Image 1 (cartoon, one colour):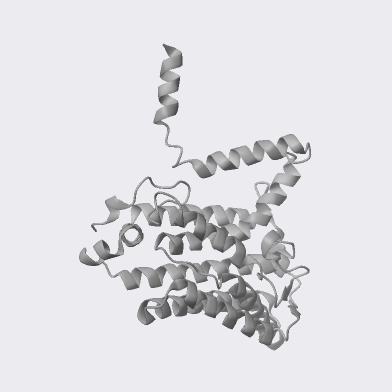
Image 2 (spheres, rainbow, N blue to C red):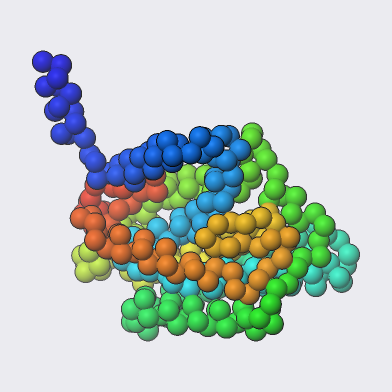
Length: 302
C-alpha cells in the first residue's frame, strides 16, 4: 500500500516545473563524487562568487526570453559599460580627489548607460519591427566596437584604492555580489508573479496576438524587458570590476582593470539558453525566476 502511494506521488510530481533544480542537484552530486575538494566551503563560496555576475545578467535575460526575444549584445555591453564606468570614475577622482564621490558617479554612469542601451535595443525591436536576434546581433558589434575604441583595444585600470573592497567583502560568510544576486532574484520573481507587469509579460510570451486583443501594450512590455536587462548588465559590471577577480565565462576584470574584450564569449551561453527555452513545451510563457510556471495561458487576460 505504501509502495503504491509512493509510486503515485512520483507520477504526480511535476518534473518539468522543477527540472532545473533536479539537474542542479544531479550535477552537484556528480561533482562531489568525482572530487573530494568540491564540497569544501571555500570552493563552494568561490563558485557562488563566480556565478553571481552571470546570474545577475541571466535574471534580466529571463525577462527578455519570456517575451520570446533574445539579447546577444549583453557580452559586448559588459565591456562597454565597465570601460565607461571606470573612465568616469577616474575622471571624477582626478578632478575632485574624493574616492567615494568618484565611485558613486562611476556606478551611476554605468547604470544610466546600461538603461539607455537596453532602451535602444527595445525601441529598435518594437518600433522597427525587426527580429530581436538581428537587432541585438547588430548592437553586439556596435557595443564591441565602442568598447574597443573607448579602451583603445586594451584595458583601463581604476585609480581608486578602495573600489575593490566592496566586491571582495563578505556578509554572513558569503561575498556581497552573491547577496546582490539573491536579492535581485527575489525582487524580480515578485515582479513576475505578483505585479500587473509580470502578468502582461507572460501574456506576451504566451500569445502576442491574444495579448494585443486584451489591450496590453505589447511594445511597452518588451521595451521595459530589454531596459531591465541593460540595467542588470550594468549592476553586474559594477560588481565585476570592483571584485578584482575572475568571474568565470565572462572573464571579469582582474586587478581592478577593465579589458575591452571582456564578455566576448557571452553570446554562446545566451544562445544556448534561448534555444533551450525555445524547445521546451511551455514555450516562452514561463513566469518564475526560481521555478518554471506550468503554463502561461492564464496570464493572457489582464
